[in-house]
Length: 250
Image 1: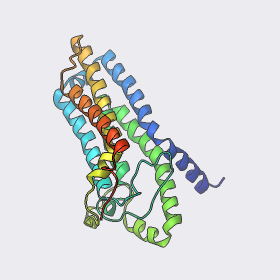
Image 2 (image 1 turned 135 degrees about the horizontal axis):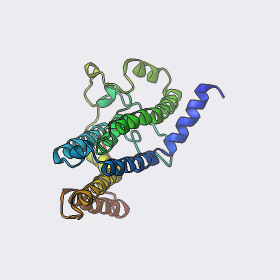
Image 3 (image 1 turned 45 degrees about the vertical axis):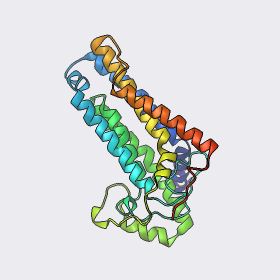
């Protein structure tokens, strides 16, 4: 099979199962985290530092913010979690974050999971994570671009030729063409927020147990996770019983 077709095939497969990639990263990250705790050394100073943990969570929050801005201003039936249905692109997003790079969602994903990777305080794991992320999502980005190029032809090529894939070109910024949709954010990001806070809580509990031999569930990590669980349940009930969260934008 020619490399172009092989990359497309691999990208389509990885796109379909991309929700599982973070699980692998978290499992490996936890193993590295336990190893750092076991061997001790300078990394413990960072692992046990509240300020360092806040920096890590700040990086993850920045990634979530990028996703929120990309999705909130995007057109309907684009920038979605289309894992089951396959790729969907009713139009080409060209304004907002999509005016400065072509894949803002994956930029957001990178920073979200980079923040979690940094909790291990292991530089080599952070570098390895970055390398794995690039290899994994490079195929997905290739498959997505081939899909959209086949749909829109020269219109896509013209936009892609002046818009970087991953590194932002801030001078190319264009104001979002659509108004911001909180409904779209609530619908699409509830699970991602829940998972992020769950992971934060797990790392926090492990940290507490190692350094104090006890686990205090009455702290910020537990409260954030509990709040995200309640929020997730409320949104799911609303979606199943009402039409309040149906997309309707000018």
